[in-house]
Length: 262
Image (cartoon, rainbow, N blue to C red; front, side, top):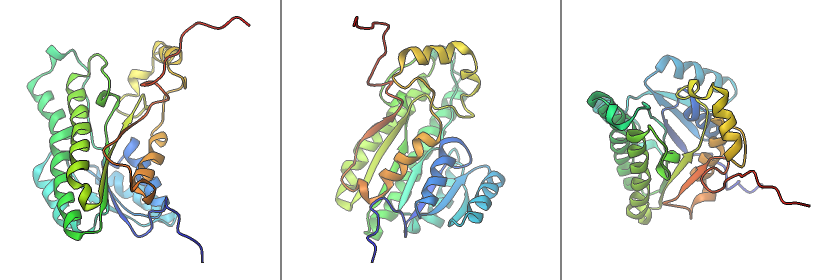
């Protein structure tokens, strides 16, 4: 008899909030490949159905759930329908507007806060209540950002939400640890997605990154997916309250022009 892999997600149900594209979709694909029944959730149901169809064709167990984390009723409906089934919750949904702090409108501020933080808190609380009632433990993986741990210009409101997600991660890890629920945060670095693709088009941006980051390339959504699977698996049963950067070394290293004389 073969021993089950500690990285396997077989027999688990994973809900990926924000799975229609980018990091969320990459994570959903890897969750399914690791054996989880994977529920792709987002506003773009048609896009989700197309992705789910392809995953089913590949032999994976997937489903689709309409979810708008900016809408309280949508969140409540999702929790009511799926809450008793979910073993793994991955919070990816997010949006951003890059401006000087004094230039944000009230509408932009409220929209970013609701999408990136308030809705995720409500969803996590709802799913977490069911995880605790079931008594089988669970995993929560929040997708933060380098702005969870660092500061860069023109990202004030986004940085507030992502910093708060790291704070939420630590507190829920403490509150829910006795229920065998591990809560962790992933901080993606300069990952190119539809939200920032245009910003990375000028050569000056990639030249800058190559000059300062240990791994000189921008990241891809797939670079984040493996860690999400790890943190959702039995291999991470003793990891909780952490924020792990997937950033090519940006947050911990620097490159400089000095070279030793041989």
